[in-house]
Length: 62
Image 1 (cartoon, rainbow, N blue to C red):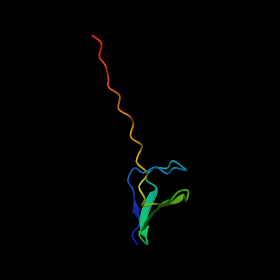
Image 2: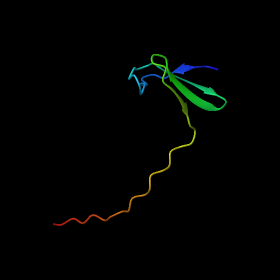
Image 3: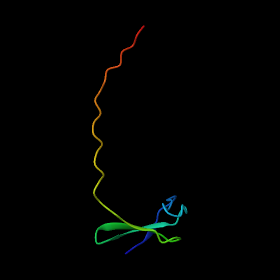
Image 4: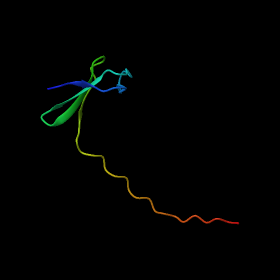
């Protein structure tokens, strides 16, 4: 298992830059801050797409 640091990544808890490392375990990505210990498993499911907004024509008045 190779743990890699992510350049310019900022920890959501301690706001430290360049302290996040990411690795894959059993097909699931995980991240951890080496300064404060913040840990999170990254879900592979993409977020739902936003609902389409109705299109309204624009009228130009001379």
